[in-house]
Image (cartoon, rainbow, N blue to C red; front, top):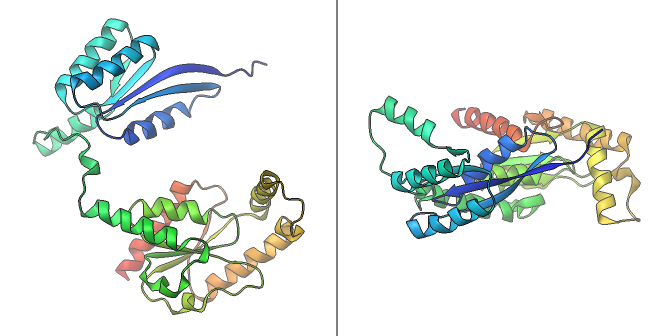
Length: 275
C-alpha cells in the first residue's frame, strides 16, 4: 500500500490579509488524502511592484494560483501571466461578486480589504476578544453578567477554543470549568443577561483527549480519575443535572467541530435575546 504523501505548490494572492483565501484553500485541500499543499501566501498585493514579486515566485514554484484581488487591472495581469505559464488561476471572489452585482444591480467600489475596515464591528470584536481572554477558565467570575454567553463544561470539552471562535465574531464569552467537588462561582447563579450553555461529550471521547494531554505533558504523577471513564461519566452526570436544574441548554460536542458548536450556541443566543 502506498502511504506516501504528494505535495504541490499553492499560491494565495490577496490584496488584504489573505484570511479568506487561506480558509477556502485549506477547506478544499482537506478533501484530498495524501496530497498536501506547500502554501505561498502573498498578502497586501495592491500595486504592480507588489505583484511583481509574487509572479517571480509563481514562476519559480509553479502550481495552483488562487486570488482575491478587487483591482481589475491587477487581476487581469495575474490572469494573463498564469495563462502564459499554463497554470490554473482562479479568482475566489469573482463568482460571488457576479451574483451580488446581478442581484443588487450596482457596481463594486473596489475597496481592498474592505471587510477589515476599522468600523464599529471591528472594535466590537476586539472588545469581545479581550473580555473572553480575561474570563477564560473561570477567571474574573464577579462580572459574569457582562458576558453575552457563559459556557460551562468539564475538562476537555473545547470550552476555550469555542469561546475564542465566538469572540472573533463579536460575542463576549466567559467559560467556567465544572470540576468535581469544586462548586461553580456563586455569581453564575445570579446572572440575568447572558445565555448559559453547557458542553458535554462522550466519556470515551473525553478520556481519549485527556490521555493524549497527559502523554503530551509527560506527566507521570496525576490523578488517575482524570482519565477514568466511570469518573468522567460521573462528572458529566453532575454537569447534566446542573444544567437541567437551571434550564440551561446542553450541547454534545462529541462529533461536532468548533464551528458547528459555535453555530449551535449562536442559535440559542438568538432565541435567548428574543425571549
